[in-house]
Image (cartoon, rainbow, N blue to C red; front, side, top):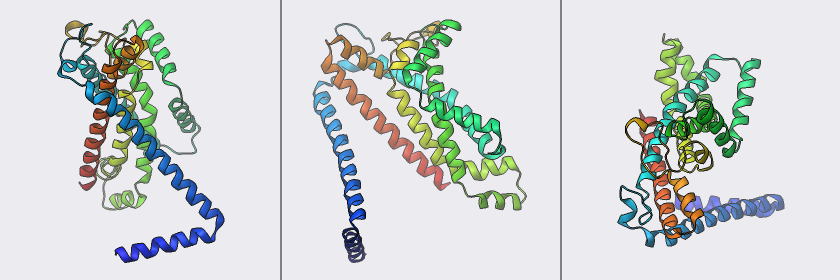
Length: 291
């Protein structure tokens, strides 16, 4: 097998050399890949070198104060706001995509407007979502700068992403599976929940993972809606108390200019959290695809 692979690679390289255009494109693709890998390794190494020496147990204490800028309240707030945002956006996004793919006609003008609106919303800057959330959730609904305002704002932000990825995942399921299920006497809903959705689950999870990544790394929208109070809301103010996520925590520390070392340490923690989320989600996708 190794001998065959080496021969095939040599044949491909000879084919690229014979055609100048193919050789040029091959070189450009390789350079782009090397540049992407190099930038990733540089950023990762820079963050780790700057942040790991500054990680200490005091950063994970429960209370935040001027003597100890603990990231624990921001970490818990990040988890809370991610859970609430996904609880709002995931059902709406998945079922909207199911309606667009399984129950609607692509030639319908209303469906075209929905797809155009979804693509437009996915390209809007996060600061615009933050201003909308501030005007609507914070001011009009009088929720104030709170966990709930931030969660609803982020759910609107990641909704187009979840809709588009779910729609593409459903379209990737071959129609022969649907036809075979119908031929065996299964109805529309049974085919959808027993055949189509399990096959499309890896693609749906990919969209949710991307949404989680955007939530965890978002700061501009949350500054205007959730605030920057370094405290975990509790009691009667649990949903309507001001919060600070890890991204906002990093922004606040770096803007003050007094806690740069702690900012790098927070960046390392955030980087590790994103890697763990992607790893766990990948395992879930593999397990669900085998069912």
